[in-house]
Length: 279
Image (cartoon, rainbow, N blue to C red):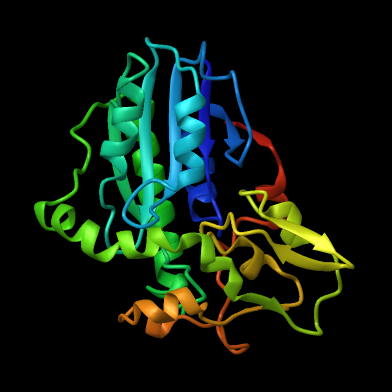
C-alpha cells in the first residue's frame, strides 16, 4: 500500500496531525506543501491525504494552488483533515470541488480543533498543556478511521458561515497583499536566515542579513514563532487599520506575547521537503 499525505503547516499543528495519522496508516510519505512545489506521488498512491489549517474560513491559497496542479489516482481513497480553532468554514467544499475536477472526490473529511496560533493577534488558546494532548488523541483516532478507509459526509459550512463569509472574510482577503508590511525586525536579529528557509510561501528574502517580506504572505506565522531570537515583531499595516473591526484592533505583536508552535514540531521538520513515517 502506498500512502501519501500532503501537508501545509505554519506553526506545526497540521504537521503533527499528519505524522500521527501516518503512523496509524502503517506508514506514509508526508510532503511539505510549499509555493512552487510539485509532486507525482499521488498518481499511483492507494491513499491520498491533505492536511492544512483553515485560513479565512477556507483552504490556504498555497495548498489550493498545489492541489489544483496535482494529479491524483482516481482509484485512491482520499481524505482531508483541517486544523482549526473556531470556524472550519468551506475548506472541505473547496477541496472536494478541486478533486471532482480531477475525476475523484473527498471520501473522508474531519475538522481537528487545535491550539489557536495567530500570535500576531492573541495568546495561544485553548491552553496548549490541555489542547495539545487532546488534539493528538483526536488525530490518532482520525488516523484509525482513515486506515479503515471509512467514508463520511465531511463537515460543510453552515448557512450562517456562508452568509457571513463575504462580509467578514472578503475584506481581509482583499488587502492580504498588504499583510506582511506589518513585520519588522529588532536588533536581536542575527541574520541566520531561518525565516527565509521556513516560509512555505517563499515570501522572505534576505538583504544585508535582514529579512525582507515580498508581499506574498498568507499569515502562517512560521517566521515569527520559529525565530530563535524572537526578533520578528508586527504592527498593524495601514490597510488593515482602515478596516477598523474587532479583529484588526487586536493585531500587533508585543515582545512579551507567547510565540506558540506545536511542541513536537521543529523548524527542521517544516523546512524538510518530505518525511517518511514508518510504523
